[in-house]
Length: 117
Image (cartoon, rainbow, N blue to C red):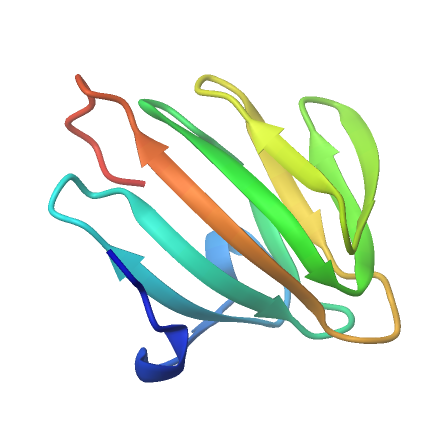
């Protein structure tokens, strides 16, 4: 199956999960509620701290630089790096760079999960 993000409308979400600024995202959601996204955070924007229960998230960074807060730690992220947040863990993404932070993300629901995050 081919997903053409150029044909998916951008959704702009203010203060996503308690973060700062706006999160721009093109999102495909399948019937199993798995999410496949192309996201963008402007400089100074962030996605607030949140826990993944019943799913995990994989984020591959395409452009820019930023910081990922994870279960009390900090990871420097940027183009070419991949972040994985397993079920039961939490993370937050901050664009503290000078250009947009662009990434591709997949939130995969577990087979027994009834909650869509």
